[in-house]
Length: 390
Image 1: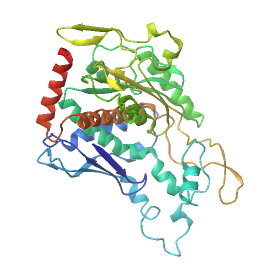
Image 2: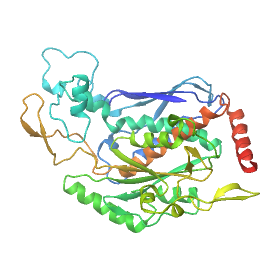
Image 3: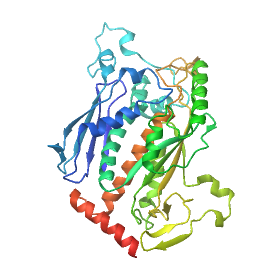
Image 4: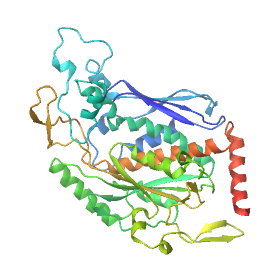
């Protein structure tokens, strides 16, 4: 299973094409739109979220509410395109049209792809880089992840996310009764946090960053429950599921670190306090006394909840811009300013949730017979039974 995205931040639309979905899977636009709306929420978002009301158009691969097994094409139109038709148009500009039409950018922003992308592709106008490197592209990554989440839910697998740190303020509440109770709390939190006291402090820190023309980052956590044991591989490094999940997290704009279970804390503990002891009973089969390794051992699932965290750096577009160098004049200047958020960590948690959902679904489709949904459901249940009785 794979997908490809296309589109620029201020272009006419964002597109993704998904290949490898089982046939016969229920899929409606509202399944995806619900998740797109979640991505646009969160305390600290900028004015772009008020302009765009992201909704999807399913252009192919679905008939009468069911997937066909052929590629599924999803399109999200950019409402702001009407203000950018000349600036981002495909046709060459007229000779008498001024610089305003071109909106040329020659001052790269520190921490962004602007300068490196310009060097790579030879662009003297850095808008050609920033339009694609923008986090706006995560819109259709969430759309693809929403399709994956739909598939996982039909297999009895649930995915959720929450924020555990913003601007150095940490949530002290990590426990939850069930994944549904976690969702109920975080969906009603402006910063998607389980700790209501930390929530207030996080919002205050975001307000202060905005007032100062600055930005702040944080840490998000994604949890996957219901995975059967043995998904992934120990045979080759590129088939290890934790490696794929780590790559998915750091592929999100502004993410610079990833950990599973207790993560980096394992470096400061003896092995007896890191590894999860194995137990067995007739009802549950093999389980672990603890879940310090985050549901993954040897590149494969253990059947315990998968717990993965990602570190998001502060957004590099600042309203008090850092020093840069004009690539034409080579003179020092303050970097260019584009519309931006003071904090996008709550929204990034939703993005992380969906890129993880995609990799989990992809691993299942790759490992088990998946041309038809009904067959895949039976195969996954057989795997669960087999693992319990092994």
